[in-house]
Structures are given as structure tokens and as C-alpha cells.
Length: 157
Image 1 (cartoon, rainbow, N blue to C red):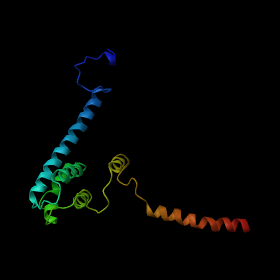
Image 2: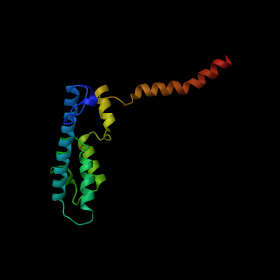
Image 3: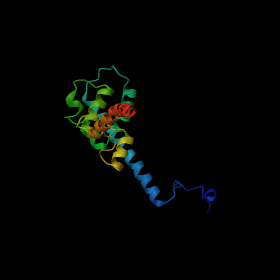
Image 4: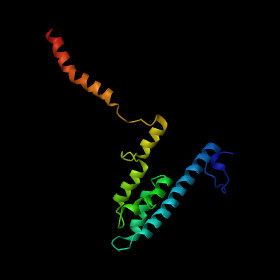
């Protein structure tokens, strides 16, 4: 049966194999889990702080859910525990302050949080992908600085 003659009632997306369908379903499930956890975490966070009526609650909630959903579930849950955001702020934090706490929880070494691309590359190429080997860099910089002197010396000689 060709693609254009598939039954109208077919709800399964047309993917090359069952494995492709399973992988896509797994991604959808993970995204759904992250979003539902993010919503629960933001609801808990908003319930901990006093309401001073200074923010648009709907807009603030939407952007906080968007922020939280970009982090693994474990990071989200640690951020709203007593040792996370509620333990560090007396008043409702700004989005930037919440992001800083989430970044610190995700990467306790203090390095800036990796983008999705960086996480993917480190997972596939190794944990040191994209990092500079300073000894090699200094050797290259040293030889680059010495190059003009070597050229001058060889042309005079």
C-alpha cells in the first residue's frame, strides 16, 4: 500500500521503522514529563513566597515553567527544595535569579550552563569536547609569535 493510499483512520505518524516511532514516542514522553514537573515545581515555588502583587502572575508562571522545563527533572526538584531557591531568597526571585540557581545546581563547578548543542556534543564526543588544552594553545601561540622572527632571520641570512 503506497503512502497516499494509507487508511484515513491511521493515527500513527508515518516514520521509517518501529524503532523511529519508539524513539519519537520516548522523546515526547520525556518532554511531557519535564513540562509537568516544571509546572508542579513552579506552583510549589509560588506557594512558598508571599504574594506582593508586583508581577503578572500568568506571565511570570509561563516564563518560569519555560525556564524550568529546560533543565533535567532532578535539577528542577532540587531547585524548589528547602536548600534551593526557597532557602536562598526572602522574596520571589526574578527569572534571572532563578536561572542562576538552576545553572548552579546543574553544574556545581560554576561553569556556565551548557546549551543543548554542547550537552549533545559532550555526550557524543566526550566530556572535554570544546574545551581548550591550554598547554597546546600556549605552544601554538608561542610558535605563532616566533614565526615573524624566524622569517626575518631566514631572509637576512
